[in-house]
Image (cartoon, rainbow, N blue to C red; front, side, top):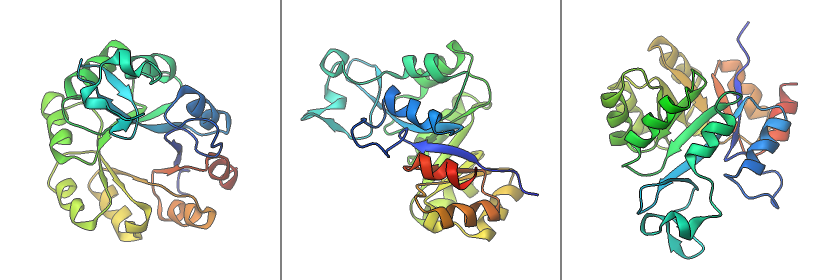
Length: 216
């Protein structure tokens, strides 16, 4: 029998629109629904802090040009690792270059074990992470088939395609290469079951209640 996939909330849980995504409240909902962990996004401020947010601009302010004091309502990566690093699988998506050293240092500081992957759409970020630490778990995120070529030519351990790009053959190829494959963002129960039947290693969903109920 195939092992059940890891169940991960996308930016926490996006079921309750009154709870902001990429916040501890959203992460707590995902875990309360029964998820194994969650995906979240990290950006870099101009004063060198790692803040948790998806969009490059927050409340009319560019994150890359702001100081942490201007973004006090945003969580910081340090606090998220401290709060969840020992009890949830963390998919830490780096939205920009320049975070590699900070993330590696925080993973060491908080003694994060094996239950994480540091992922990015940016091949150079993935390469830099592996160059700095051969032991770090790195994933490449793909929304176009041509992006698979970077994964095929790299030593990155996780392939994270949009679920519409996934085939049974791709799952088998990833496993034959010693990689794990996570599917994002899957919000349909039938698609979740189909992907699990193909043997994907993780499913990322906005609808964490549906995700966990599908595999209950």
